[in-house]
Image 1: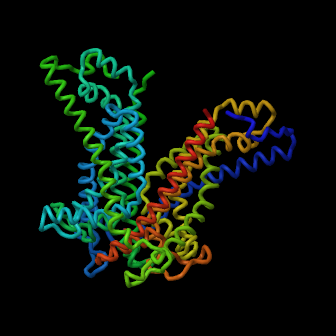
Image 2 (image 1 turned 45 degrees about the horizontal axis):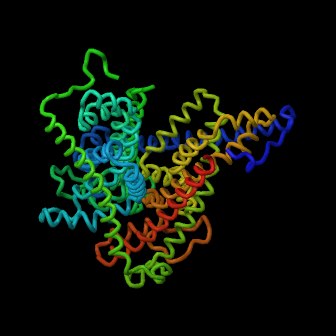
Image 3 (image 1 turned 135 degrees about the horizontal axis):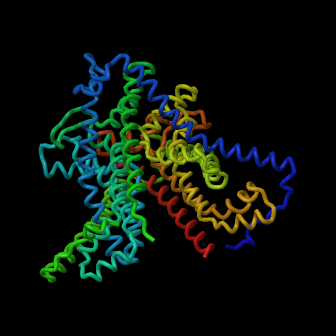
Length: 309
Length: 296
């Protein structure tokens, strides 16, 4: 530390009344700022809960959670949320199938095989990829991935779940790679050396020692990525379409929960109407699902983290 | 570690050559996959550049959006984004840094503070579109701020606050205890210590976190669409209560149209957006580098 650049302490009389008052005021002010985050959470819960409550006075929870038709704007209306949930699951599942193996392989390469120089290039590139706005990924899906898919599968629809899944997979990949790399790099060198001393090859060290030892961090990164994929909005809105649909293939247009919210808000739903309330119910469902995943990933990190000394 | 009755790992002492071959294949596989990821970034950037560069000229930067691709530009979107980011910075930086200082320097590890910490890490994982809905209900409707820059900035501030807080706390944690002890020993109060010593020492780290958080805010689209950032704005906003558009909204609007020309315009706008983001990231890296040297 170079202390000379900092202002020296102004010595004051701590016991002076005004100083103590100022201290108290400042501390309270900082505490109030910290309360903003609590207020935000309370606001989220109250608002989603309130609008959700009035929604469920019109529509029975059974119809909402079990219904298979989502037609909120046209007569006859129907409020079964399953098609939206299915759309989200389809995209998330596809994204996970793409991103988890690739992300883990990259993490293994970065932590076990890559030289320091390669690491110092690839890591920032991955961070850069993670920082690209999601709307750019949407553009990429529509102008690059979809035409490519069209070439391979001629009867695929213009908007399709596959394109959305691929682009979301690409989007969460850097997150899995960097977080898992952090977890694997934190495994102490002595464990690797012990295994090598017993005659293991690098493959055996990686798969039987390093990955199991870093598993809590790796699993946490998977869950965070899945939660991110579920909440992802712009790329799937652009790529996957706006047709609530329990589609069994990846080739059809679907609609995710997030894409539905965007669609309604672009149409400027009047406040108080049932369409306006559906925004909050769907958002509430989204909030609960992602919250569960996030809490789960924190729990895994805390409970199963191996502690080495 | 594993329990003693279960072997930690099993070696197949068979054909050593085969095992080494397997290891080699695995290593190459992982390397290939990683480089493919990097190549993907190159493809993405190439795709955007090829489509967008021919539209990138002064006319594109200085024109308002238009129905005719040849006349369309991003002037109002760019100005809207600048307005937005300034307002977000003014709102979120003081609150975020104050929260971090409170949690790190004034925290007495009681129940409430534990709750705040847990709460912040959970807020960081809430999807951005949920913040958009809250912004719509609270700022636009309840507080009557309409579909204004201020509504957008407040919503985005809520979104990036957890990021700023988490980054600032990490930065504050790296300030050595001895500095605080020295200040206390000379009779400084807690706040004097924090303001004159901890904060300056932590400021490069805080600044890096803030820049990264702001660059996240620049690229966020979904909350702004919820708030009702307009897609066609042929004027410059003059105050925080004016309606607005922003770069990501403009990009979304152009990408969502079927015509090829508009896709190319979107690519042009993406180049501008990425250039702004790259500049901010570069600034963050430079600041981090300088700070590291100073402390070494």
